[in-house]
Structure formats: C-alpha cells, structure tokens
Image (tube, rainbow, N blue to C red; front, top):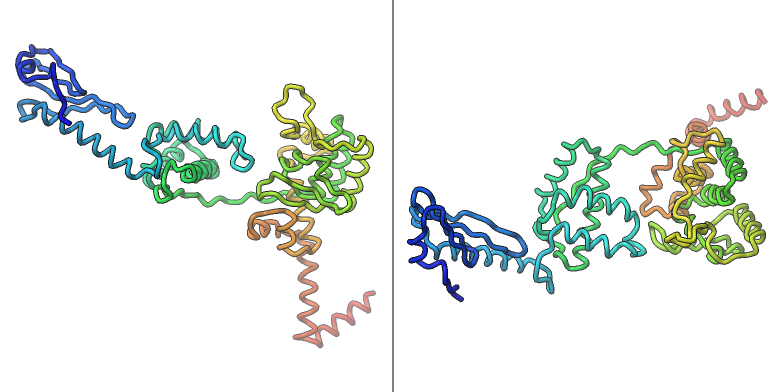
Length: 400
C-alpha cells in the first residue's frame, strides 16, 4: 500500500531553506548549505533502529527511492522471519533470549545445575559481547570472534571452554523452546585441556582427616567425610541425602538429583553401620542429613560444607589448597581400582557418564604396578622359559 505524504511533498521540498528539514514516515529530507538536498531514513525494523543516508538530490535521489529503501529493509526482515521456527514471529536478541533462559532453568531439577556460573558467563561475558545480535543469526564466524576476543583479554583456555559450554547449553535449550531451529546452531569449538593430576589421600591422610572431622565443632563434618570416603559421591549429592532415602538393610542410598541422573548408590557395610548408629542416636529422623539451621534459608538442606571441611583439613595438618571435598571422591574411586574392581563396575558405583572418564583414575601407585607386573612375569616365565622359572623358584626357596 502506497504511503500518503502530507508534509514531504515536492513543493515543500523545493521550498526548503538551507538547514531546513522535513521528516515523515521515517524519511528525512534536509537542505544542505550548498543548496543540495540529502535524503536519509530513520526507522525501526524488527526492533532495531536503522539510521542511514540514502543519497543526494544531485545524485538523482528522490523521495520514492527512499521509500523503496525502507520497503527493502522490511522485506528482508520478513524474509528473515521465514528462518524462524514455527510459531515464532519475531527473532530473539541474544541478551533477551539469555535472560529468558536463566529464568526458565532457575528451578529446573536438571538444567538448573551450576546456575551461578551459567549466570556469570552469560551476563558478564557472552551477552555484553553478542548484545542485540539475533539468536538465529549466530554463525561459526561470530563464535570464533568471541573466542578471539576472550583470548585477547588473557582468558585461559579452560575458562573459555566453560563459557562455551554455557553457550552450547543455552543454544540447545533455545532449539528445544523453538527460539531457533536445530540447523541454525553454530559449531561450538573447544580447546584441548591438559588434565590436572588427580590428587588422592594416603591411608594415613584418610585416618587423620577422619579423626579431625570427628573432633570438629560441627556434628555434620564427620558424617560428610565418612560418606564421601565410603561412596565417592559428589559434594552436592551428599548434602541432598535424606534419612528416609537410606536403605540400611540393603546398603543403598537413593540419589534423586545427580549429575548423571537418579540412581541407587551402594554403600559399604562399615558406613551402613555408622549411619545406622547415628540415625538411632538422633531419634530416627526422616528428613535431611544436613539440614539448614537458619530460619530464613532458601533451601531446607545445606548447599555446601566447604568451611567446615577446610577446618578439618587444617586440623589434620593437611593442605586445604590440595585437599578439597572432591579429593575424597578421587580417593574412593582410586581405592576401588587399586583393590582390583573392574572398570565397568567402578563406573556403576562412581556414576561417570563414560568409561573413558574412569580411565583417568588408573594412575595406580608404583608398588601396585610392580606387583601386577610380577604376576605377569611369573606367568610369562612358566609358559615361555620354564628353566628360568624353576631357577627363580629355587633361588626364592633358598633365600626363604
């Protein structure tokens, strides 16, 4: 439908004095000091302000060409909307979509995990970079520009990887919620990271830590350490355990919310005995093992026990920077491997997503490796070099 102009007419344009201006329907006509007329546009298209000079009258420009320029922008915008998923009429800007994402996942039992880092990555890093860029127009090139930008800021590869993981999770939800189509998600690169050496406690360190935890002023400290060493459960999983979810007879803890999904966590007999004794002494409660003590707390159970754990570590004469709650998980899993438990079973107990992740824990001690190789040597000698095998046995018997 053709626009009707009441101010921006040819007589009015011809009558414009130097410095004069007429604005109508987003078209701006201005008389310059040299007598020429400049045409520009100033319109909103799909929520974005577009202010652009079209040209001058001396170049053959007219009002009709300015009209066509505006219509061309709006046509391209409509064509862009055809790339949107069914049901969505207006594309989401990165910042708006990011805020919607954070709101939706805040109380989600699965997607809401690690909400703090996700919120920080989006609000402090990703949104300030991508700003109002349309979510369905992100490309491999724009993502690589972000990576380049963060590297220039001095961010470590591991830090950038965490931010890109948040971005990937965000875009996956955007596809699920029909903000964008699956084929519109750009490739998210990742840096190879050098894995840190896994730290585990020795038998002596486990003993002194447990003793220090039992002496701690907080009665929950020893319980946390005992469950961590006895099961290899994660910090957050332990704090979400309820008494009514512990089956002492079958030695199982029901874990309803965990990184790898719901599961039944097996527990050793000694730990089951300790939990049963504690349960009886407390009057057989049914609630949280680690309840909050503050009346105004947002959650019914503790969200972290890092301060109490650090205090026990220091009391045991260990280094807090080295011995963290997650080290107890490393220790428990490594103990299973050292005791000869097969890797698939270890995976079922530790609840790692892949067997490859369990393989990280096969950093066995030199003594354990030497013992294993000695067994292989005996079998090798008996089968391949029986004379040598008999000679070795004779030598050992004479020494004995």
